Image (cartoon, rainbow, N blue to C red; front, side, top):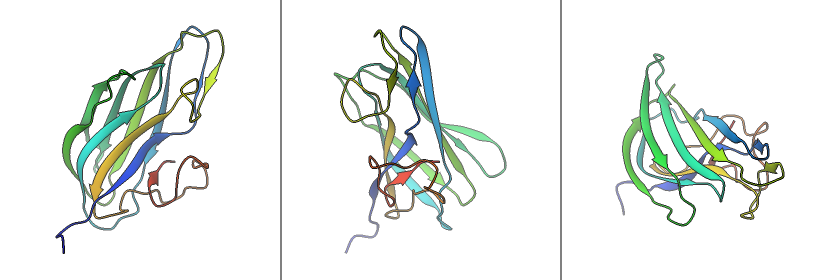
Length: 151
């Protein structure tokens, strides 16, 4: 048996509406329900064609903030980053995605590349520890309850 089993969870948001020919952003918060430490190993920022940059910040229970990562984004060259960190009970993760909508239309969230996404796919253990306390307000058919930490 392995000493630890990790899963990949999504941080970010499914609430996006980007105006035509403008810079825009989307952000989401993750409040893990785990009562034990969560060990983050890697981050893989994922957006679509309009994505330019993503950052994830850890807000500690005492209010202090630490940068998990701030990554440039290029859809044609997506990168997974080593982001070792420990999330303690009471900590939260804030993920913000930055976009440049070069089209003539509003762009919302969707699975096709003509739409957008704002997900940081995070590898962490224990398995399924990064999930939201309340998924009713932020999760759709794109995400699954045990792999999404979206509020």
